[in-house]
Image 1: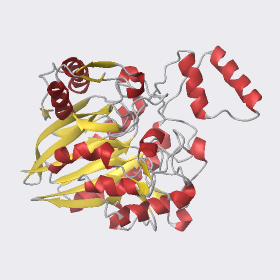
Image 2 (image 1 turned 120 degrees about the vertical axis):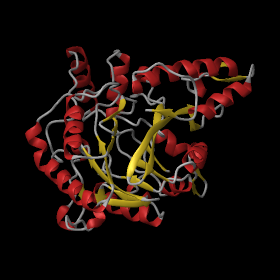
Image 3 (image 1 turned 180 degrees about the vertical axis):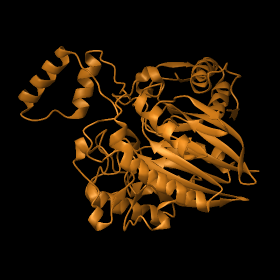
Image 4 (image 1 turned 135 degrees about the vertical axis):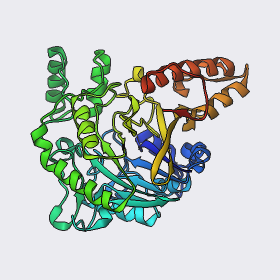
Length: 424
């Protein structure tokens, strides 16, 4: 059997970007190097690349909701064992059409295959679908997103110039993936802040205000207008049918879901139902920034949210109670053109003693804490700067307790203990 591994959101938020800065460029390897062993166990690995590579001239990431990663990030992702990334996500247009073009060019320069956003796009070009032969099984991967933050960046892909992103709903839809109803007291304070500032208060300041007022950060996933998505779903159907003619297994990686929602809402439920109806052999969603359920139904694995690979775990907008620092690496064992078995591993993002944000396979982090014994380590779930220390033994116990909560959320089953892989 051959093994395919799929991971979730590879992000480059300000803390991740700034810690990688060096005198002569950027070095992201310290943040990702502990994933090399896990990914090397796969014959091929895929990730969701949620960071445009627009180039230095367009300004690297300094804000939470407007991303642009240094080109070195793509080379690091390639070096740790990722062979292909999806690029249809809500940040694809954060640096405009130039960013779309440069992202494709920089991924190509790094030798990293990709699908989801395109330059010189044509619906007749088979290159819009990713194909890969893995042993005796040929797979196809298709990537679509619910949107590209049009309300924030006011950017549409320039179709006339050949720039394209795969959408699950119209790019300028007035219906977001979620709707948040804020109390009147919040609205009044936010309006006052806008008047005092003489303009629109930055999103980060609104986040600080919500935190100060104790307003939850979770985004809903319950706005659904099926008719609005029909043209997009016809495109997805056409892509599926073409891929089905040319591959044994056809997978879709949708970017959708309410951020920090631990359960899928109406929009995600509808999309998964439609994708199952089309006939996809596996569905691997991202965007929620926290883990949701996973299941195998009718032989089709569905991961409703793969979680965060490299999110800054202590960002002010992260809903800490949802444990956003955890993610799954989905593993598919392939044989004779079929999925013989589906498993998953857990990973966790932590801050080291020196403040470095690092991602570990859960079993390796657990062993690291156990080996520390009675020596002090940064307490799991706390930033290094808070100087909250516990013994390695206590940290291992806390890690196992969190893992049990995450495992139950993903599978609905009782936690069997820390190990490398779990059967779904």
